Image 1 (cartoon, rainbow, N blue to C red):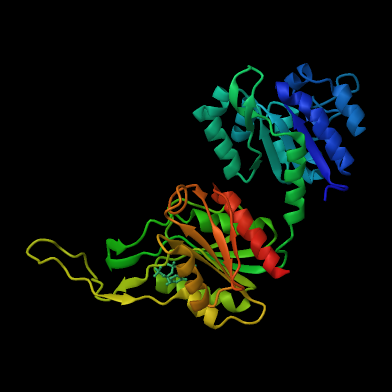
Image 2 (image 1 turned 135 degrees about the vertical axis):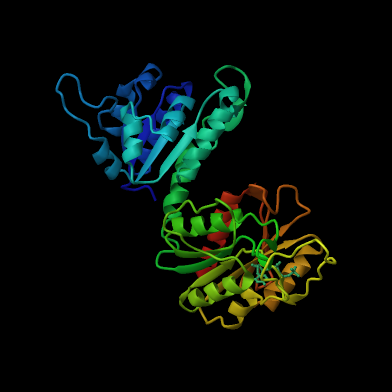
Length: 401
Ligand code: CTP
């Protein structure tokens, strides 16, 4: 997977820089061409000679070579790279990357890079836990960078906690996984629904639910990262946006609008992933002007059933199309989910239970079991919604085969 890949390896000034030599060796052994860029302080921790010997290329630190005046183009390097890896990434470099402080070759190359960027933080536990670091890492994530979380263990300070750079073997594994998953969905048109629907009572009030849309947006991103053309039909989710610019978002408000938009996309789609928490009912006697309290009795709302969007798509599913549903249950989970799978003519259903801590609405984590039409059930451990999205994408990809 890494054969012939161009990797820009950025090394910053931390004790873990000594591990960058092993990382470089593993990358070269896997067939990658590696160009090392060091920050000035990284040279205090590991000799450039070690790295240039391992890669067979001079290490770049400065914008130009002092004695020859040779200019090193961060733009060319950024375009050359198939991936950029910053390992170890100190709190300082993470901060500079997050805020575009381009005062060295590493950060300028990062800003010019068109390729995916992987960041492996390494620092003391208190620096790692500081809200500034958390905010900077979240910014980097929101720009589409991949953070390779540090492990817990003994740190350079001899304190024990989170902040140890992930082992070089694992970093290489992450890159391998990335390159192998790219293109899994190339040429596939995918419909994803996400978020809640709002059903109006009057011009200022609605019936809704607590769905944040995070799971659906993460799935749309994961599929687009793997090459799919994604149309994301989304209910109201505030400021939430997909990270991948290739996801096309179509905003709707109500279940009827969501159905309408889905029916435009579904006939030409290869698959649909239904994560939306669609309101089961809408208000039949919706008021055209604001319902007033004064002098009135409590209003009576008459509810009518909304269409089942997943089931509607399921009923018109053509051979070769895949339909994946989600189910959030509170009791008798597997039986309810299996029933929905059948009723809606789904190929698989992703079940999460509100009884599992960390699963459900609003959280950044989720714990799922995927049930398939063939009766099999695959449980997964508690993970971040991004990781769950990657698992769901991998699972769907296995159905394609
Ligand atoms: N779904 C849908 N349209 C609806 C209701 C649900 O597309 N009107 C989809 C959801 O996006 C999800 C799956 O169907 O993929 C299951 O949703 P859920 O709300 O759990 O199912 P319901 O059939 O509404 O069952 P209930 O609310 O009774 O649990």
